[in-house]
Length: 342
Image 1 (cartoon, rainbow, N blue to C red):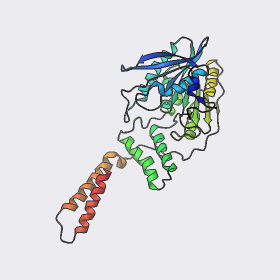
Image 2: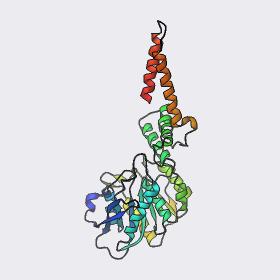
Image 3: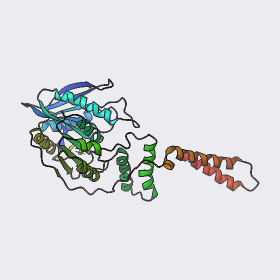
Image 4: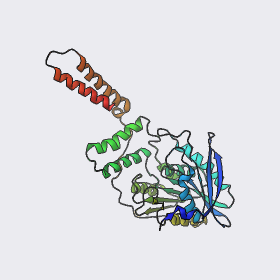
C-alpha cells in the first residue's frame, strides 16, 4: 500500500525554521516531528534535487512520511542565488546543507542525525557528510555514482532508445553534443566525479534507487557506490519505482519503513552489516564522456562552420560565367544549411 500525503496530515507537528547561507541568502523551512513523541529521536535533513530556489514543500510528502515513522525531519528551501542552468557549485550547496543541519541538531528532542539527498542531492549530501563528523549517517535516493555530464548523457541516450532512435544520431546527441556543451562551459559541474568523496565517508550509507529509474543509471551508480564506500553500505532497489521513489500520490511501497528502520538501527548503535540487493537490468549502459579533444572543442567546431559558411557565400555571390546557376544554387543552399546549424 502506498503512503498517501492526505493520510499523513495529522501524523506530525510542524515548526518553522530559518537559516542564512554563507553569502547571505536567508532560507526558510519546516521541521516535522511525530505527535506525542518522547525522548530523543533520530533526525534527518532532506536535501533537494536539481532546480533553482526549490520550495521545502516539494519534499513535504517525504518529510511527513518519515516523521510518521518516528523521525524528526527538516526540509528547507533551496538557494536561488549562484545557481542556474549553466552554473552551480556543489561545495556551496553542501555548505548550505551543513548550515541547515546545524539548525536541525539544535532542535529539542533530536539525538543522532543524518542527511538525505535526492538526485542532485545525491552528489551534494555526500560532500556535506564528508566535511562534518556531526553527520551520523547518510541516505541517498537516486544518487548518481558517476559524473553529471555522463549521467545526463545517459538520460538522453535512454530517451532516444525509448523513442526507437538508432544510428549515428544516437551517439552524436547523447555523447558528442553533451561533451561539446561541457567543454563550452554550458554544463555545470560537468566532470565532478563523486568517487573520491564517497571513499572519504566515515558514516554508514543507505543508498536507494528505483529499479525503473530512467534519469540516473541505477545499476552503474550502485556499482560505483559498492566500489568506493568503505563505511558500511546498504544498497536497496524498489521494484517498479521511478527515480524519486514517488508513485502516484505517494511513495513507493515499503520505502519510508525501510528508511526509518535503517536510520533507527544506526542511531541506536546497531549499524547493519553491508548488504546489497541484486542489480536491476539497466539498459542501455552509459557512454564515456571524456573531455573533448582539441578538434572537438567549441571554438574549433564554430570556426569550421563559419569558414564553410563564408566559403559558400563567397562562391554564391562572386561573378560567374553564364550557365553556372546550378553551382551558385548549391552554394546558396550550403550557406543556408550551415547558417541553420550555427
